[in-house]
Image 1: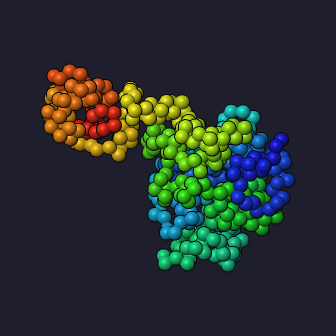
Image 2: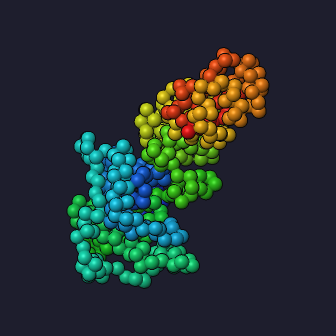
Image 3: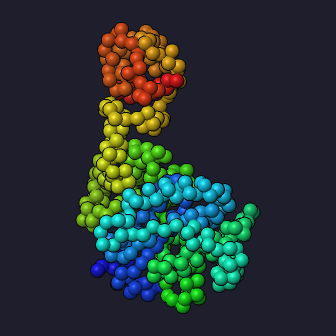
Length: 422
């Protein structure tokens, strides 16, 4: 079989590894794991880097373990954080775990084929420990000077707020995860983002000291755009994989707006497009950037992969709405996202229902007066939900409201107004 390390490097999913011996080890099937932090009930686009890496391992014939951090989620990973996380309740973590499991089941094969992945929850083994037992059986293998030398710890200790003992112990918990998975499943490789290097090496060292075995760690770069912004909740630009948090339309548009300088790199990381397909798209960016073909392919692939054909269809229909397309099949929340940047007005049902459309156009602020609204209608420029109003005596009815609460009024092709009715 092909060595997956070559694939990862080609797809820009390789940053570092703990030993060059890993390259030889990957010539045969091994067991690999990656962990996901249940800090939210949905993963987001930044996590898709880890998902793609696991997918490449599974496609290459390696056994994949997906770990959801029911125990470590109660502590909070300090890696890459300048301040301490707010501790979550056990109920919150359990709720988030269910959302993450649903997300992951869309991308990793846990059932079919000859090589199904395994999903585990580290709370299942950490709950068996008492504090004294854990200190005696696990803590004794860690050296404080080495723990303080980890970059995630060192940066926090240099900050004004410092680091709590709770977060300081996070690397011990994650290190023990690797030891447990080595014992139970023969797992010999942990992968993660470059900010996880300290936690990963804590695990490789623990396995070496306790079992005398050689295991490995591999990291991939944190994906940022050409302006240095990463896909992360802390960056304020998170694109969640759950459409209840990020609509199909917003998810699609996020990737459609990718800069020319980033799009080929993102296609290489986030899709399984072939080298020839990537070359063709790279040529299109260079010779016909105004067509934005690469961005369209990226948006289509990501939306279809995450949300299926239905999600892609909704996103594409929503995109066409801005240019006069049909509202059919769109929900109120879709419209709130699509028209988030246009002027809006909130009126009561009594103000608008069964009132002349020209009155509603003036009352909402789309037009400055009823006279202006009447002239706009006569000229064929007044529409509701992208349907032209031609009858000067037309009234605004409940049928015009999407889910009984929203309508989009438009003057001409470009001036839109979002009407919210309560």
